[in-house]
Length: 258
Ligand SMILES: NC(=O)c1ccc[n+]([C@@H]2O[C@H](COP(=O)([O-])OP(=O)(O)OC[C@H]3O[C@@H](n4cnc5c(N)ncnc54)[C@H](O)[C@@H]3O)[C@@H](O)[C@H]2O)c1
Image 1 (cartoon, rainbow, N blue to C red):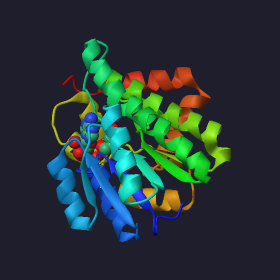
Image 2: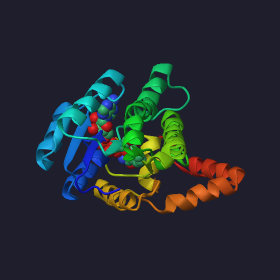
Image 3: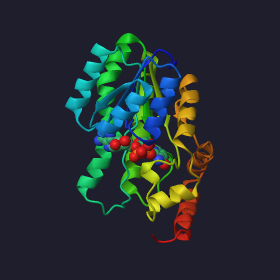
Image 4: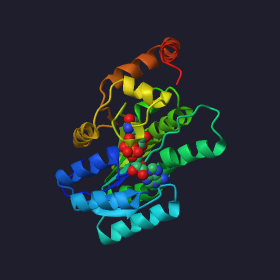
């Protein structure tokens, strides 16, 4: 897809990867970049910096998301790229209570369902539109130390695949962004297994993710891998699941128990 002249929305755009993507889209000539985040002040600050539009949005509220989309379409123009990028980790195993699991599900998966339910019919009618879901390498592999993150990011990848298969022929483009470690507020804490393991695998900057996104969108790539080695890891996992599980177990045992 061509960013130049497009109306773009980035959820979770106040910080980290979302902020870097919003800045990059503005630099690449998007007509309008809408920065939507539960941190309304942060969204407004990024929007002010790039000449975009800031929106306070909790992506788990269907009413708020639908109202925002209607408002943007009426006041700015048809949305051509929606980046469902807001996401949360938990740092927990299966012991996390249902409220914690539901929170991860609502932000990491259901928010993208809500956006797609509203936008895909508009896009199929227009014959074009693009959805980018920020999943994670955890959605293709696993994230040691965070069960809800792993499970919901696998769900995000599955959702992106399903929409691409079901609506791809109707003009709906889909990209699934699956980075490994990226230096953002999400990964800045110390002493948490889920984060320490990501740091140990090698961190990149949000701007490098935005670069991979720009290249991937221009090529209409489905899978966008800012860490290219993730493709090899995924092939190893698919090629011999038992061996991959043994390797992951060994990796976990080799790490300090935080
Ligand atoms: N940092 C990494 O290593 C890494 C790796 C792979 C994938 N990701 C994914 O990238 C995305 C962005 O994460 P990041 O690393 O930039 O983290 P971040 O914490 O810097 O940014 C996440 C943003 O999402 C917003 N947000 C959270 N809940 C929200 C809600 N209910 N409604 C609206 N906005 C909400 C936060 O306010 C924040 O601005 C997430 O989906 C994350 O899972 C991150």
